[in-house]
Structure formats: C-alpha cells, structure tokens
Image (cartoon, rainbow, N blue to C red):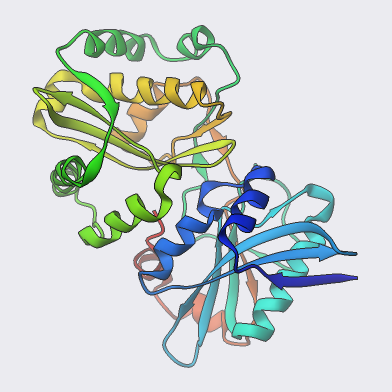
Length: 325
C-alpha cells in the first residue's frame, strides 16, 4: 500500500532528506524562503508499506483563472530508480486532488534519461539542465589537471594578488556583496529580487547557504553564494565589481570555494547551468566535461494544460513566474 503523508517538522524533514542525498533546494530552509515570497509550500513523504520510498518539497503557485494553480518540485522528487514510477504517480495524484493544478512540473536532480511515461518533456526550463558538476571525491591535483591551462594560471595569479578569500559574515558584509550583485546585474542585463528576498535566503537557509567573498582592503570585490546539502553544493548567485575584474578575483574565489566544499565532505559541486555566454565560458574552464540533467517534465493535470502551454507566451512568463534561483 502506498500513501502520501505531509511533514510539518523541520528537523524530521531535513534529517530524512540529508540522509537521502537530497539537493539543497529540497531542504526546509529553501521552502521557507519561497513561502515568504508568494509561494505555498508542502513537504510530503511517499511511503510504501510504511517505509519511505520518496520525498518532495512541493511549491504551489496560484495562477489567474481558469488555470487555478501550478505545482513545482525543484530538483526533485527525492527517490531511487526502482521507486521512481510509484513516487511520481502518487505525487501527481496527491497534488491533483489537493490543489487541482494545471500541471505538476518537476526538475529532477538526475542525469538525462529516457522519457517518463505519462509526462511531457517541457521545452521551457526553469533551472537550466545543461550544467557542470564537479566530482569532489577526486584529488585536488586531478581537479586542477581537468581545468584549462588559462584557468590554472589565473587561479595562481589571482591568489597571488593582495586579496583575502573567506566566508561572508553578518548583514554588513552581505549588503556589500548585494551591492556588487546589483552592479553585475546592471552590467549583464538580468533581473534581481528585492533585498528582503536575499536576506531571507541568508537567514532561513543558514548553514546550508554559505557565502564566500574575495576582499581587497577589507572590502569585497567578488562573491559566490551557495546552497548546500549533505552531498551537493549548488551555486545560487555571484558577481564582482570593476576592481574584482582587474584582479581576476573570481578565479581564486571559485577555487577556494571548491576546495572548502571538498574539505567539508561534499561530493558534488554544481555550477548551476551553462548558457552560451561569458559567464558559462568562465565556468567551463574549471572542467573538461559537461553534465546534462533530466530537464523539465510536466504532468498535465487539467484539460486546460494545452491552453497553458500553447496559448500563453510561456517562455518568458514562466521564467518571471518561478525565478527559483
């Protein structure tokens, strides 16, 4: 017998999810961030004969009529291969009866594989499936050897500059990094959340969201912000100012962060997406491979699903709607 049970205890949830190697976007704190910014959050365990076979932190977004709601599971659900079909079927049935959504959208944290029966592989992704994931079980020398020659050179050069790389502490240093992020966004032409959103990430994720920065004359010139779980480090945000660019501080900063994650026992370092831009070119210098995750899958749960995907200009709207990271 398979059941779906709601979890309302933070410690129980995180202990179970961390033990199952869950992605940090499935941790309680990330749900609290989204709940504070126009999402409804529910966390459920899927049990078979009273044994947990899967878990999912489900984000619910209320949509204009007649679409009602949309259910979304970022980098989930959390389940093993043999249980995947049962877990997905039960989650779809549960959200359909509870929230009556137009669809259930999932973006699993597993490599690309065959299509899921009864699910549609959506072209409008929320989190980018093409990414770069470092295996931090490798030795540092091997990680360095897999980088491009230029990246290794810039790591050495930037590390030799008069900069200090360390973890960001306190609201004052956080605000200084957010000021850099605003400069970066203006330069690269991308949108940002308001400051309270980032304060919530910093506070609600806590130890699961470390931020590192390169400092020059005690002021940050570049920063890198992560979400982490037991096994996975996931880049959330980053940027640098003009001085940071001149010092190429992002090279020493990223390598320091990777080294720190390795020391902390984390096995996977996810660069959070690759596009065809300068930032992606910088990321690609840190490895000799790419990874392709499964991508975005929709389970249509309403007769209006076709209208939702074909009549609405979904591509741009869905990015603005979710803005998950």
